[in-house]
Image (tube, rainbow, N blue to C red; front, side, top):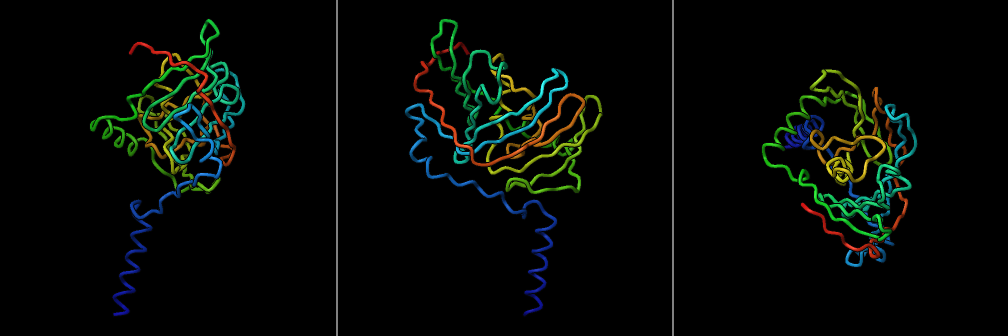
Length: 247
């Protein structure tokens, strides 16, 4: 009996080592005490307890700096603030809030100096079956993991060899497994003529929602996740009047 139990336990351990399905899930980040007081979306107020901070260098534009993205770990909502994220790439917007379901709130000032709020929806967040299948196939084909892994900021990152289908060129990238969707970052690429981050995160068609591009060093851009942790920020959209735009 003991021998059979030992064999069973050994088999489970081997499966856990070999199969991704047995891999330990990324732990969710709990809400901090301030969230209950400050998260009031019905009143236009949004509280973000954490922030992702990247160092970047855009070789094409010859620019470099720091990019900060605020996060609410509970809903996965993210906030992009003009001064710390998109800068002049956001025209007259003060901040943008993105949600994992594809909804975005753009708050800024129009030509007359009036505070306006524009609501947008990125439909690519919910692809059809064929598109999702193509994404999964492309990921397996063009994004191949190496043996390199590392733990940073309480998250696990893995190095991959990324091959570009059009040119066949290859480069190494690091992807970080997250307990929240990173599509609010990738989805900004689909909102035309709105906000542009200083480096491109156009990876929604290739990467699943729980893999964050945390490092890349290519001919066009250098990007590395510098920190991830508590960095409270409150965005208030109450004073911005909703502006309807044509579909």
